[in-house]
Image 1 (tube, rainbow, N blue to C red):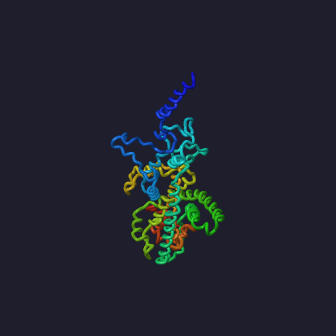
Image 2 (image 1 turned 60 degrees about the vertical axis):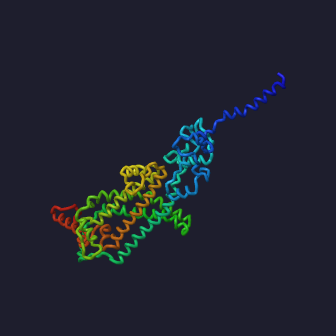
Image 3 (image 1 turned 135 degrees about the horizontal axis):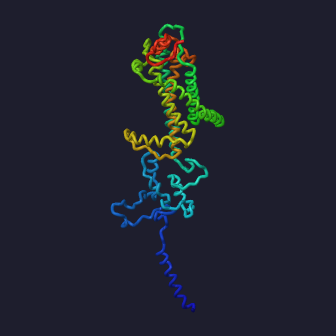
Length: 434
């Protein structure tokens, strides 16, 4: 065929190619909701939108669909925010092949889409480590936890302890030491046996170490580093962490011992109402309400120790074994089922918690309970030492002055005397007199 005859054919093919190509062009996968692309959504023309559907108008035209300053401020203030414009802009659909699969798209997503996938925990991540938290690469709740820990927790917790100390100091200045009103007899009565004192001091001694080490770890970073330097602080912090983690076992053992030994004597009864009606007599002289082995004030301390101690032990175990003892998701389910949040005008508590959120909530709860525990124990220490004459002997030598026992535990003294004479004891059992 001659070249002059081929030229018209080639020219017609060249002119037809753009039209054919235009007919066969398909929109990018992202335009129909699939694959990894720029994340932009191609909207249908306005006449194809079903009646009643919201108009296809960009919600944030001033930023091209990105978040605005108002969005950022609402999120920082903890206000409710519809972030679907970010959550859904990850370049993925439910029907897409896995990223690392044979048909998956490797590296096809833009950086913003990848970070949004990580931010909203929709990324397909393969981690060499194994564990509940191995696949969670970003969990921004840690900032809220840190801000609460260094802000309200440390501030109000510190004010609570200082306030209790101030109240005790003021009470001592006004009331003075609670003395034994009657004549000293010189006779001493066995109040606590050796095993009881062992359990008490095991619990008390371990709690003091845990309290001091915990306060150091919370407040040390805020104020001590500048005073003692980073190196010395790091050495002390290492000792504090080791002590806190290991002495906690002694605390839990002591808690079990005192609970088993004293729970029967701490059941509330009618005499406790008489004791509470006069404030135990600690505000007045020569006022001594009847009481058995433990009066109403001691019973309040006992149950506070048992309940707070059990709670702080559970959260402590969760922290000792990270990610293995989630506590709050199931607890929130129970609370939601009871409708408790609605009583206070709140919505349901979150039940889908990341492993890190469980740990952060455990640490926060552990610290809050610890502050309440320390506040209670400060009052107990005060009464047991400088606040009341003769009280320390009960846990020191185990034997107390008979007149002290009559004034503060008169019904218990009567029980012991009847038991010593061989008469049947009425009320709760008690230890024999010496």
